[in-house]
Image 1 (cartoon, rainbow, N blue to C red):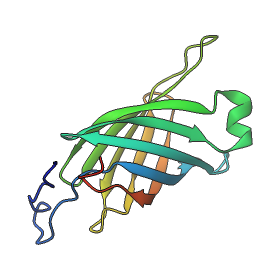
Image 2 (cartoon, rainbow, N blue to C red; image 1 turned 60 degrees about the horizontal axis):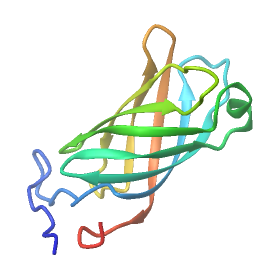
Image 3 (cartoon, one colour; image 1 turned 45 degrees about the vertical axis):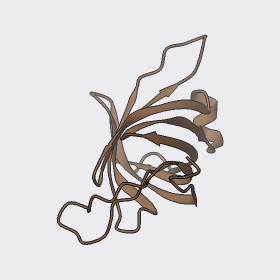
Length: 137
């Protein structure tokens, strides 16, 4: 049986969530107004602060330029979330996208910035679709 963690949010009085495991829906926008925002879905598994999962871009314009499937790998420390998005393709190597975000008080939303060093950047927001309890994770 897994016992949920009970540490508090930094500077807060609410317990930190046991994990971020579950389904998430997201939207990303570009820093420049030349490109339209895009949508994605993600499945995240967290174990001891390590994040792993999958991301599926749901924007047809993005899918025309690169694969719609990517892996997610990163870490969570308190409210801070950092992960890398790597597109899966045997035909071409794509730049790794870095995400830096913060979890809200209810652990239902992650918001922050994404960037490809030296290329492009923007903001993102992810909303939890389903919470998986620590006992079920």
